[in-house]
Amino acid sequence: MVEEFTDKEFEMYSRQIVLSAIGYQGQEKLKKGRVAVVGVGGLGSPVATLLTAMGVGYIRIIDRDIVEVSNLHRQHLYTFKDVGYPKVEVAAKRLRELNPYIEVEPFPIFIDDSTVLEAVRDVDVVVDGLDNFKARRAVNKACYKLSIPYIYASAIETYGSTTTIIPGVGPCLECIFPNVSDEGLPTCSTVGVHPSVLQIISGIEVYEVVNILTGKSPRLLGKLLIYDLRELTSSLVDVTKSKYCSVCGGLGVEKEEVRYPVVEEVCARGGLATFMVNPGRIIRLNLEELLSRLNSPKYKLITRSQLGMTLQIDSKIKFSLLHSGIAVIEGVESGEEALRIYRDIMENVIKIETEI
Amino acid sequence: MPKVKLVLPSILACSGDKVREIEASTIRDVVEYLCSLRPDIKSRIISHDGEINTFLNFYVNGVNAYFIKGVETELKDGDEVSVIPALGGG
Image (cartoon, rainbow over all chains, first blue to last red; front, top):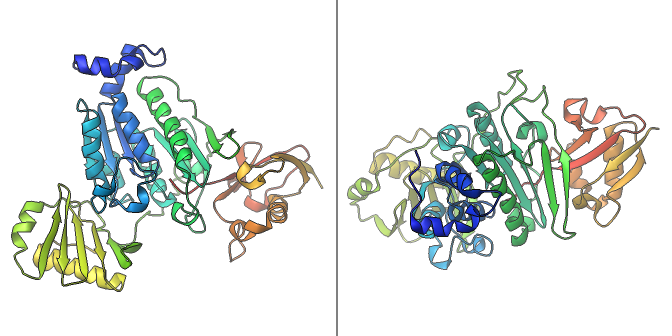
């Protein structure tokens, strides 16, 4: 049951309500809609902003990252003052300010097979704001299992691509890009990405979300759109479902688990080696309770935010912990050292079994 | 050798023709053609162990060759082969 629009909402959405492609009934359906934006980086930031401003009733934003200066040229949910804070926390605050009439839920987690089913549960559409195929393959499998439409998109340099996946109806991501690995693929940090191509592709993703939520046929079902900003051209390629697909082909051959390593090196901050530790499951920590246990002079609280906190450990190590159990550790020599510190704090100070 | 219609994305064709006719008996021949067309990215097309990198997909008349016989997929006169790279970033 959708409540009536307030006068402010009605005014805010007036240009969509008069738009024949959406209309009053479409706007009501958007308000009822529930969407998960997986990744709020280059693609996910504009996707989440548009969906919020357009009045989609519930938006879940999922990302494990912390805001970095190198994000700011294309990820406009964040500003310099947000550097060092969890992306989903900053994004949720900005999005709620943009539209106080919708619900925004932040999920500061890794996306892999251990977390993805919980992350995308109970939504009508999942939108891709990811930057790697490992996580996309996990999302594709989960969306197939839960029968949730998934808007795939990616962008690099001046190119972008997107398609709409309706489980059981058209091809899934594994049909289109079988067995694809991130190994050997250029990334935004190595070859760059033009912010304009992100705006174009994210705009098309949102168009498809709106088509689905308002009961219209998605335009990119069974079609992969590839956009080239340099030439201002796009191509639409027919893509087909395969009966041999390891995810949706029905042969039951999908065995591979998509899991992140428990510890991985991420972009160095301030010249210090930085590692991220993945708890391998979704943990829900009570940060207030944790802070009360951190009474050792060894740990000094530097920052405390809604979803996380950063501790200084001796003079050179910074330990940032999100309430989902993810930690970012700066100033250590190796992944082993990062993991040792993580286990020590979690098991001996916070008293939580880590299982890693 | 069969003559096939090769459809390239602009990311691979650069400023050249995106649709061209080439001679190819199998997808392997198409890969060799791509390597000669773009020697600058040959190392991205073929990985260090000699396998075709998984980001490149070859659709034969709308069906991904991965689900036919991979690089050994046979081609015949008039087939349309579209090369579709998976883009990784976002």
